Image 1 (tube, rainbow over the protein chains, first blue to last red):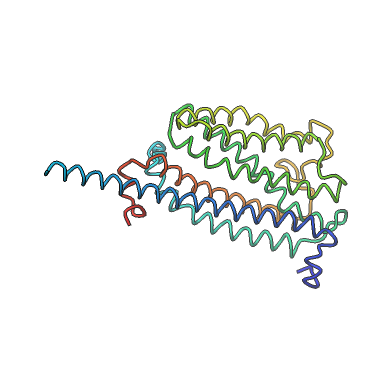
Image 2: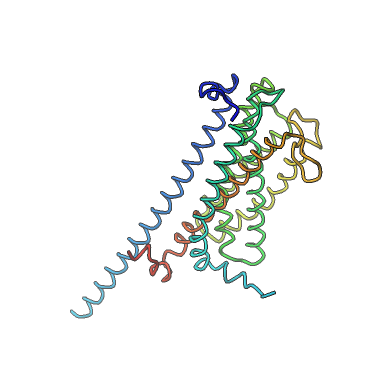
Length: 68
Length: 247
């Protein structure tokens, strides 16, 4: 460990804006990307389920028609 | 050696299951490498005698730049496979890679600008290395825009494959730009043929973050390709029999 205090660490020898600007934006974008991928996956799963439910309803409706 | 039938694993149905089992492992690897790399880079590695603490940007900048080039080559690789063997998975893999590649190309430019300002006195210069990396970023955006503009998936995949293959010529240009032209950007500090021109601890920090980015990209691409498979095979019986769909 080469830092004497947290404030020295955050200060980054006067380069704080540049170093933390790099690390921060990288971390933020990676989190956003993961979140976006999860959201997209859930959305597609929901669509597939809806499609299936509709197909089932149509199936039942047509069998009812046949009986009548 | 036993003959492996790669086409079996390239079937979307099989690959969906494989990718589902594999991505969490790569996510764990990414986290472990990231913790180790950031620890070495930000807590252990010494201060640079010329650039002070500002040099620590390279722990993000160099791995992000490498990934931006590797991912583009991976897209070109899948595109060649797609055009030659006409496998459906290839187009989906290329598409799953593009957003992550664009992200790393952007991060390469962003962290580069944040390094350039204090070290060179400029956020941006029209130097061969920077310009060719900017073109790479635009190629990613072009790929994404082109493929999402064409509704027919087969045509869209084929058009995307062409842009991925043709654009791949830019990757060696980025890599060798610091040798071929007189650039403000410094030459490679790490190469396959020579001993690295940097302290061992700095090198280790950088390599570990690079491994973390590799694992992160693989995990995310496997995850994203599953979404694409579900989307494209949404009418297939196997999708309707999936546990996550029936429950």
